[in-house]
Every structure is written in structure tokens, then in C-alpha cells.
Length: 98
Image 1 (tube, rainbow, N blue to C red):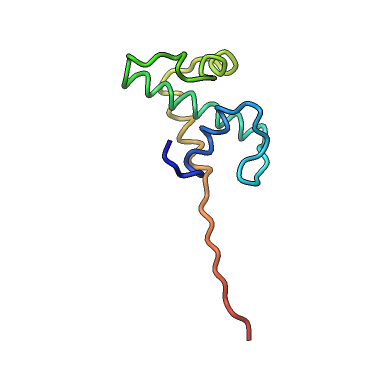
Image 2: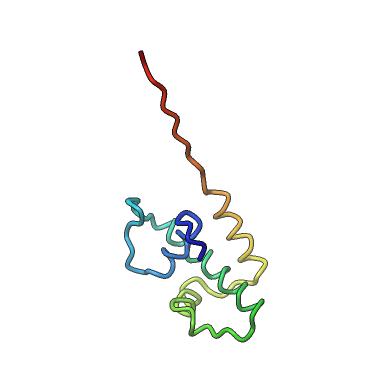
């Protein structure tokens, strides 16, 4: 985890099945699904980079695999890119009115 809530948001959502809101924002069904698919791709990449890691060390990984199915790494990468493309950055500018 990166200690950046916006970057880690999908991980928190996927790992905490009972979570209904995060940082004062309610979760939608589609956001939870996207977060869980992103989490699966994140963990699958770790497995491919570090074969010594066991799936039992990753909490909901096996349950999410049963729920969403195991996808090929290529499919998982596309999913994670799709999620990243939906993230936005918001800036606020204040001006004084005379």
C-alpha cells in the first residue's frame, strides 16, 4: 500500500467486504466490483513476481477468485487500466468577490 488513500482505495474496498463508505463517500456496486477485480490483478501480479507468496496470505483473494473467476494476466491488466482511467483529480480555486 502506498499510504495514498486515492491510490489505495480499491485495495481497502476489496479487502473489507462489509465496507459501505470510505472517506465520506458511499460505495456503489460497480465500484466494489471494479475494486475487487483490481485487487485480483494486483495480487496475481505479486504471485507472478514472487512465487514464494501463498494465496492464503492475501485474505479475500481466494473468495474473490471464486466470486469473479480467475482471469488470465492479460485480462486482469486490462481491468486495472480501466479502473485507473476512471480516476479523476479535482482542484479547487477560490477567488475573492468584491
